[in-house]
Structure formats: structure tokens, C-alpha cells
Figure 1 (tube, helix red, strand yellow):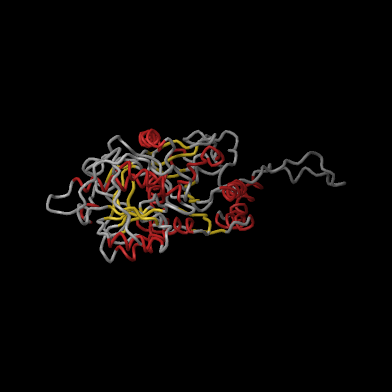
Figure 2 (tube, rainbow, N blue to C red):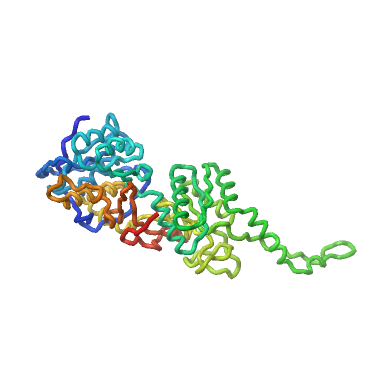
Length: 463
């Protein structure tokens, strides 16, 4: 592939040491796929920065084909972050061109780029990483698939593993001890299942029971019935219901004709005890989530009206018919995915459920600046492009005078991490990305409310 000229467009923001964005930025990214995007950046050329071997930033994005709009929006964010005349030059490569991401990465290495931003997907990252790690040149990819992570390669997307780690820690702090998961048999579901197993083991909790289901209603119904131990719970509840009858019911029969002399009391509907877990992880969305919610209600895991005189839970919702855990909390805490944030207003039946995500309020300054410049809303993945670019710009400014670039593993993996559009994040030496997320709780009328804010720093230890 012929090398494209280094990008000399220089506008917008740059960070301070570490990654201080010029205007207090932090917000909501997604591990979901493309969502459209803004146009290619139209900028006025400025004086080009000096091209020093190893200082140029390779940018690998889909700039043509089906994901072109998304790639162009991410390129706009990159140019906004690396927009000053003194920022390192950009070497932009189209991963949708002939040869794909592998050829784009090979061209970036041949051009002497010192760091690579992108590519977009996990498959493209694997292709590009097979080239970049022979350099070696660090790669900050935009996928949320942590399996591509390795020394020198980081997945910057907000990953399901990060979400699960945050929720398990918060749920254990609340007193939850018995975790389970009911998950779709998809890549997302299995990633969350593996993360739950790992986090429970790391925290000294019992191994969680996990059931994977297909998209068929029968699979959802039968799977959740089995997981919740519904039949055994109902059987145990039947003797209690019979024992509640008055002792003289059997004597209320005429000894001659056998006619009932008075109406026999009807036993109250059986209320099963709690399921064999007090925290349940879900990952479905859309119609499958609706079917899961119906099954949760049918098998009395959530949403069952309380018995007369029963107290409400601490968050104001009606308590399910089981003995609450400490503090009047719901017997089962539902845990979900950050994907719920985009339609949380429709999740009232899951009131009290949690999901982990960045605080979107902190993203507003970035949105305002992006819209003022490009006259369109940034996509969530544009946040990642901005953060990666601003990080690189900060390391470049902090580099020693005798070094061609500051993109060293030591600089990239600083223990306190970096502050970005999507909150505080840090890179580990083995290729993992750590994130500081908030916990949101679904309200009775839908919508999510932060009940445990992001800490504003990385935890000392994070599973």
C-alpha cells in the first residue's frame, strides 16, 4: 500500500501530562457496534510538525466501505485531539482498502510510525497485531474484545469483563454471596459468564451457577425455571399453605349426607421461598430481554407483589415475597449490561437492577466541543478515538528530549492511568485495560440513576 502523507491538520484540544483534556472530559462509551457518525473532518492546514522517525502516529480506521461514516467520525475526533501545530503527525490508513488491517499495519511499520491507533474490530486487531508486535510498535485498538489484548496491544472499548468486575465488587459489598447468571449463548454472554466465574473465585465467593440459553422462548422459559429451582421452591411452599388452614375444616361435613355445611376456606396462593442465588447476571437486550423478564416474574424471582403488610425495599420498590437480606434490600439483585443504558427508560419491570457504565454527564463538555466543530453528535466510539489520541499527544509532549517518541510501555502503563472522555482508564503490561465505572440502578418508572459513582481513580486491585 502506498503511504499516505502525514496529516498536518492541527486544531482543537490537547491534554496535559498524563492525559488532561483541555476541557474536563469524561463520559459514556459503548462496547456495541457502529452507530453511524459524523462527516470527515474539514480543517484548515497549519504549519506541519517536524517529522521525526518513530514519532508519527499511525491511524488505522475504516474510511471507505460499510463502516466509513463511523471511521470518518473517529478520525474527526482524532484530529480534534491532535490538532495543535506541535502535535505528532498522523499517518492515516484505510483498513477497508485492499489488504485490510494487516496491510495497513504493515504500511504503518514501514513508514516508521511509533504508535498505532486502531483498528476498529477484534478481527482487524488480530490481523494488525500479528504485524505490529514484530516491530514492536504499541497498538491502542478500539474493540471491546479483551481477548485480543497482549503485551503491546490494548483493547480500549468498555468491555463486559470490566462491567462484571465492578458489579460483583459492589454486590459483594452489599452482602451478596451467591451469584448466578442467565445469559445468551453469544460472544457477549459467554464473556460475561467467564468474567463472573473469575471474579467470584478472586473474591472468595462460591462458584456461580451459569445457564446459557438460545433465542427460543422455550429455551428461556425452561432454562430460567431450572436455574431458579422453581419446582422445588413451590413444593416446599405447599405444606406451609396447607398448614395455614383452620383445624376444624375437616369436621365441617354433615356425617349423614356428606354435604358441606359451610364454605371451606381456600388456601392462600403458595409463595415460594427465594431462589438459590441472591445476585443474578443477565446480558440480553431487545425482545429476548422482554422474554427473560416475563420468565423472571413467572418464576417469582422478581416483580411479585408483596404479601399484605410487607415492607418496601430500600429503593422504594415492592419487595418480592421472600425474606430480604440485610437492610431491607431485594432478595435478588439483578445485574445487567451497559447496553441497557440506551433503553433504560423501558426497563421499569427490572426496577432495582444494576448496570455498570461511565457517567454520561461528564461527557457533555466533549459533546459540546465536537458539535461546535463538526455540527453533528459524536458517536460513542469517537470518545475512544479522542481518548487514545489525547493520550498519545500527552506522552509525546512529556517525552525526554533525547527520545524520538514517548510511546514506551512504561509510559503507557503508568499506575494511576489517564483521565479521558470515558472516565479514568489504565493500561496493564499484559495488554489489559482497567476502567473506573459507575453503578446505575433501574428506577420503578424506568431509567437509570447512579447509586455508586465512579471513584475518579483506578482501584489498587481490580479483577
